[in-house]
Length: 112
Length: 112
Image (cartoon, rainbow over all chains, first blue to last red; front, side, top):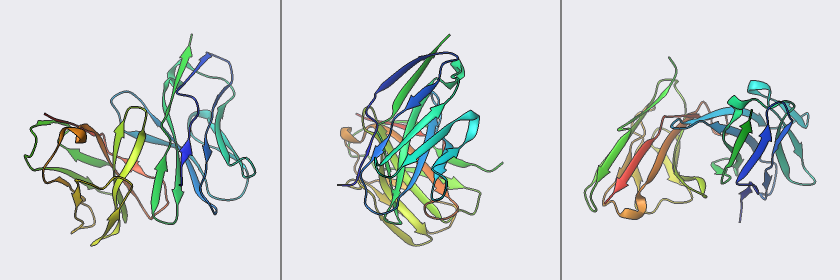
């Protein structure tokens, strides 16, 4: 079955430290990959996407993600975390030209 | 302002009472989709529409109906709601299929 996995329910990091939120996918072909962020009581907001080209994608608010085809991963990264980055992060895959699959979400806690 | 709107934002209803959640976008987007968000499960796609009069099932379509008579509107219909449909619902749209999605603010539905 096609799926997206976010293995960590929660990630804790101190402000100023680098952060990584993990995502792996198991769909065939060449899917499009996305990261979205959800703040409390809000809808999802787009961060970045990978379709083709350079494996390192830069997005909004200083976030970036690295596509690794051999490991079928698309981890979200930021060199220096801010308290305001605390939110729920979702990895998503566009597959088969019609459907989106989302991961279960990872709660990022950035502590001062 | 470019946006996706949903109404109502909050709804408490009883089992079996038909309801409709409206979704409208003002960006002339072709692709629209409905998702439900449940703790630990992330977002799951209910239905999607590639364009006017073209709709198809997502991963969890049971108990839901949709229609796409106009490009801007994509209502979600629950003909006979049941308690297991208690959830947070999001409508989203994108310019074309596979593109970045813009999400509405969400509708929190409780079925008693």
